[in-house]
Image (cartoon, rainbow, N blue to C red; front, top):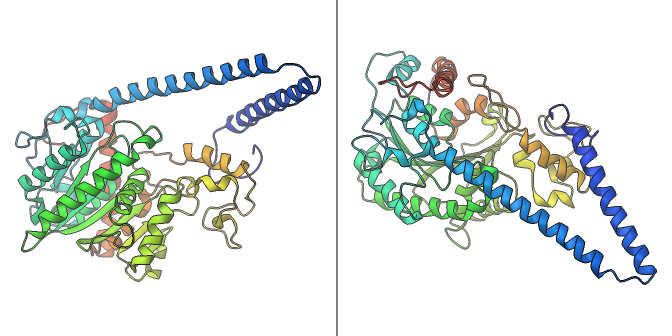
Amino acid sequence: MVTRPSLVAWPRGVRPGLGVGTGVVCAGITWLTLDTINQLRRGRNQFPRLAKMAGVVAVGWLSVTAAKALVGSRADRDGLRPDRAFAATPGSPWVSGSLDSAVDATTLGREGARFVHSYTPAAAINEVWMTDDPPVSPIRIFIGVETAATVADRVAVAIAELERTGAFDRQMLCVIAPAGSGYVNPTPISILEIATRGDCATVAVGYGLRPSFLSLDRVDVAADTQLLLLAGIIDALAARAKPARLVLYGESLGAGVQQAGLNRMAPTGGCLPGAVDRALWVGTPGGAGRDLFRARLDAAGIAHGTVDHPGQISTQHDPRVWFLEHDADPVVRFAPDALWRQPAWLNEKTRGSGVPASMSWRPVVTWVQLLVDTFFATNIRPGDFQARAHDYRADLGEVVRAAFALPMSDAAGQRLERVLRELEQDRAILISHHEFRPGHEAN
């Protein structure tokens, strides 16, 4: 485990620390097992020993539970507190939390506040399209988990916000499944807003305030949220003479919960409503839910394609459903059955991009390696777009445009890439400097 290659580089000290820790645990288990067998052979009563061991296990379990509750409680407090840069009421009437909105800005949470304040400014849109014509103001709807008490109530508020802003009549309406904390990657949303010159709307409904690894117990709530939200939007679009193009987007845990919601849509087949024009899911976590959804797509005859990088776009036949997944993304590759079964991606003679040729499967060991890999799969530096492991920012410009059929010239595409990096850098500066500049929410 310490010496074998893995999908991502681990920080110095992790490998020897993991080796020592695993060795100590294994040695302890071995000693206890052998000593217990020896005591049983001598006919000694093992009840006191077993009681002590059970007590140790119980104390350990209670300690882990208490630590998790403490960390989760702190994450909830931090997740509800907005950055000072985004604490003011949004200036655009086309976003949630503004003076025209029925959503209380204090309930958006940190990620929701970042989302609604960071709509793409007109200057950035015009820089890509090389024009001075004023674009349409983008619509961004975000409903925080604190905005209403139940899933049904939060979805009802979201539908009301979409009606208020006229989102159903825009060129495109994107339903986004956020991560556990409410985080929405701003890059794909900026791509949509720039490509449509602002004539689009995005909506996200939160289901928690904690990071994704602490939100796995919220997957059912998140899936119900996605299912109910999508049903309400489809009903509203059906009443329009010229409805918006409906597209779906999810990234990481967001991709997983959106697919989980669609898995609940019908027992067999029909896992993607006809009203959904396109869907793009990025870095979907591995596991049974992911595999089930793809099997249902196949059963329903819904065309889908998977790419590791934009260079593979030309090999696709313009499918309705797109998956962007790096071959060496441990979040995508991590699955429970890697404990006892060799995964297909390690069984191929020709390895995927970034998968070490010398990496091989070992029971338990490979699973532990992948688990550790997931903690170091993303190393984000604002404006420095990478296409590695669980960081997809460098791929999104081309893949989002292809997946959602958003035409753009090569020259405009190059300007788009530059602007996306500038927007991310500006946003990071605001967050880190704790400033607020009225009239510059998107920067």
